Image (cartoon, rainbow, N blue to C red; front, side, top):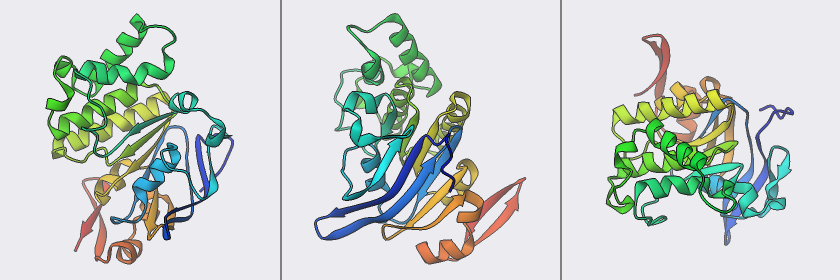
Length: 259
C-alpha cells in the first residue's frame, strides 16, 4: 500500500496486547483522500481494536499512527477530534442526550469556541438530512431503534467535518435498503469532500462493492492488503474464513458468492 505525501492516515507496525494476549501484530495500513478502506476479518481478528488505537481509546504497545503526517501521540483530544470522526458499533449507552438534534450537534464540539453558532446548527441540520434522520430531531436518542441509532451517529460524524471517518460496522442493524443508502452516503461524502474513511465490515460483498481498498486481518496480522478486488479473492477468503467462494460478474460488477 502506498505511503505518498497525500496519505491522510498512516498506521505503521502497530502492536497491541490485552495482557499476555496478542491482538494486533505489526499492522500497517493507510487511508488516502477520496477513498474507503475496508478493514475485514473474522470475529476476534483485531478490527475494532485497530479503530480504537487510531482514535486513542487504546494505546498500542509499539508502532506509530499519524494523521496528515502528525503522530497522534502529539495531539490532544480536541485536535484529534477535529481530524477523526468515530462511529462505534454499539453506542446507545455511550451517549444519553435528550434529543437526536443534540447528539448530532455534539459533532460540532471540537469547532465551537464560546457558544453554538448558526453555522454549527446549519451543519447539524444538513447532516441529519443527509442521513435521513431530520424527522427524528426532537426524539429522545435512547428511544431510537438500532438502525436509527446508527444513522444518527453517522450524522454526528458528518457534522464533525473531519479528515478521516472511522466506522465500526456502519451497516450493522440496518435492513438491506439502508445498508446500501448508508454506504452510498459514505462513498459520496468521501469523494465529494476528499476525505478518507476506514470501515470495519463483515459483509464481503458490500465491501467489494463500496471499498476502494481493503486490509484483511487474520489473528491480528495483515494477511493481505491492497485493492479490494485483489484482496478478496477465493484463496484469501478460504484462508481467513474457512469457506469456499467464487467471484462472479453479475449485472456489471464483481460479486462474492459463498459456496
